[in-house]
Image (cartoon, one colour):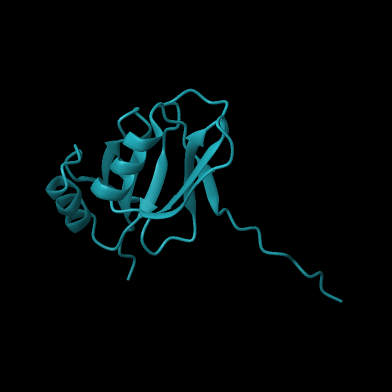
Length: 128
């Protein structure tokens, strides 16, 4: 008899920021994430959930919920179908984005949020 396995889905990553409103504006207005939740639980606890379009994984920013230093999260990665088009969209929205960089494992552009949390957009290589 086979052993049943359960799905383990990464659906939320905490991103530490210094100014929740500034970060929310950056991620929604400049990067294009959807604002799913913005809830002030108490005066000390605010939870904001933001999701990249089409993604099953969201980020959480807020106050009173994270022990990490703002800007300390590096290497967050989003896979896109066309990294050059994604770069053009970000540049058009005023985001400082690296030039397109090609590697054997994909084509990338890099950017950071206002606190310095680091992101990569990856276009997977065409193995066909």
